[in-house]
Image (cartoon, rainbow, N blue to C red; front, top):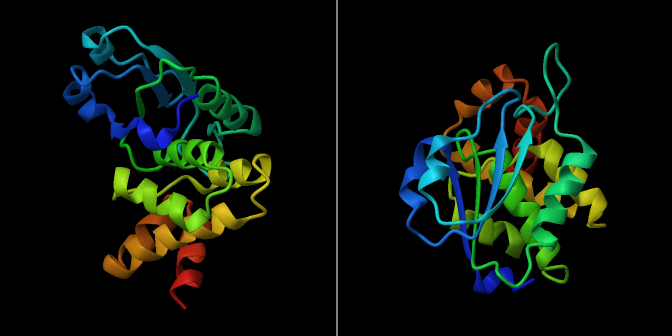
Length: 191
């Protein structure tokens, strides 16, 4: 696989897909809610390789919720690893382009840059998508798979801390969304 540092990397939400149809996207990673149809926007894209995953943007079990599992994270990492020499523009999207897609980009970057420090990888993610709030369950699973010993998850906490310092009311919103663990990780990084 080409170095991701030399590759165009995009993270977006469903409502932004149309903006990227003429940008030479060669690989698309779609993360959608269970039962959600394939986005119609892809019919305007040039031929590309695509993998689609269906699970909820959740980090804790709840009735009717399909969590991202280790097999999903392994498959996402395999997509990134096996992209091949034709990778020139990787686009990852979920519904909002904030949580699942940014977690996927973070773990693909961590895999592609195995000797890079986690803070540098997180900084790269924030360059790509400043509004990132990566799904901590996905990041934690990738942390384990990639042998990063919790360092990737700890750096994700820096992202949460940054958002919470600017918008403290976000803590209550995230708690209502059953994302208490991420709020606590962010608050611990603020100290």
